[in-house]
Length: 424
Image (cartoon, rainbow, N blue to C red; front, side):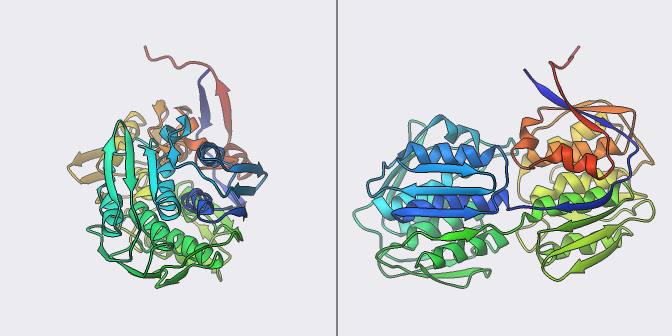
């Protein structure tokens, strides 16, 4: 049975919300547990659908995984399977991050091609090329990445683009390689720094975390650890946009505001008052209708492509005209088709979208194509006349724990409803 959200428009969101661990970090940290025999414990895990799915992926190669509340306990055996081809692999993009640990520890891997959000092509060329530089062979066969090496030897690796996934896979293979690996043009996201912290706790030797050059001195063996996941900056930013769009007042705790410097600065340009609390959280107050600002997606520390739907949704209700430029995933603008259903005034041309703000949107049935698009449509529904039906909400459940409950606590009126959509 399908589910959708009934979103009643007109709410002004006010209150406090806590952010838990980052989806874009926890799944990779779980994969890193493959690198060491024994029991690794990861705390501050978000209670989202992707965490048990990654647990299924790890079980498929021989791990014991127990998930209780916000804690994942992963027991990795001495003898692991090198084949990660369970059905769960096709349900989340991050499943491919088991490739690096399996190659690093076992010197071989057969990893099913991943699934996940429908936001455009995300080839694995850089993942494979990095492994080849370390001495492995890597091909695509029968829907799987097949990699094998006699031994892994440190190398100088340049990434054509600062890909988060490629950086993570190469990093996790390199920590057990012989010699020194230098990854240039590496991704700099806070989630990369988080995985570097955990690997270091496990005994890895890594320099340059948080910079574009990672230097990895290979070690013979790693040991299990206990690690707390960093706060989810994408979820934190979602609440910041929610405050601005609904002319609300939201305090967000559990995320480092410095991971969102650009977002918060842009919201200030849109007319919001922003207060930060060290590295613990922030507050966004939007006293009047937001003003139009331009947005350009870029790798961190630029504006995250994950947040592009929220930039479009904010622009749709802002005063003036905004230009949004998408430089990372070509299919992110699918979101705009749904915004037009809500009477948004938006046009696309290649990598650019022009959005002319309207005073109020108009409710309609809309469909989420990915996690962030789904959440963006919910926020847009809060700014629309009437009741907006947001369908395919399983996407939202993959990235936002207790999303409906948190919104209702902030003053929204949203209900989860079972039933099939009327597409007539």
